Amino acid sequence: MNPKFEIVAEPKGQTYIDLLNFAASNCESFSLVWRDQLTFEHSAYEIKHALKPFLVSNIRTNKWPRQELLGHEAIVQRYRIEDGSVNLLHAAGGLYSWLHPRLPEDLAFYASGDIVWLASISHEHEAWLLAESLRPAEIYAYVPQLKIKEYKE
Image (cartoon, rainbow, N blue to C red):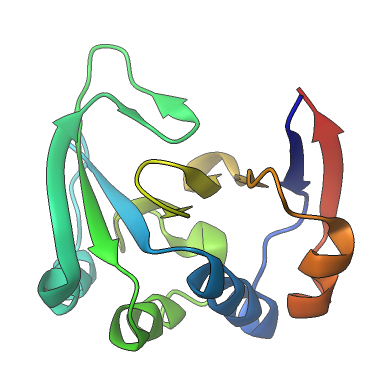
């Protein structure tokens, strides 16, 4: 069984920035989701344009971390973690602010390759730290205000 941590309260403000920095120090990429059936505002396209230099892949699918859409597809865009790309993520202000129509959805981080480190479902206000090696003390050392619950699958 892999230890996992459910994030039980939305990280906002400094807690969100601390979480982004913690993720960036442990991961090599992140993704955002553009669901086909949704209409996005100009602000979503601005972030898409700003992140373009960091784009690694652009995949049409009905699955992404912790989510599967039956009968619908989305474009999952994956980006390199660099100071510039992570700084652009700060603008959302909170983990669940990655929500249409203002922004693309479901921010996720990947430790290496396709190994999911953090997954979120913005519209359901759910998120998880999925890294097997994480321990509560390490999480709190980097993100002291993060509210988590440990569980085993």
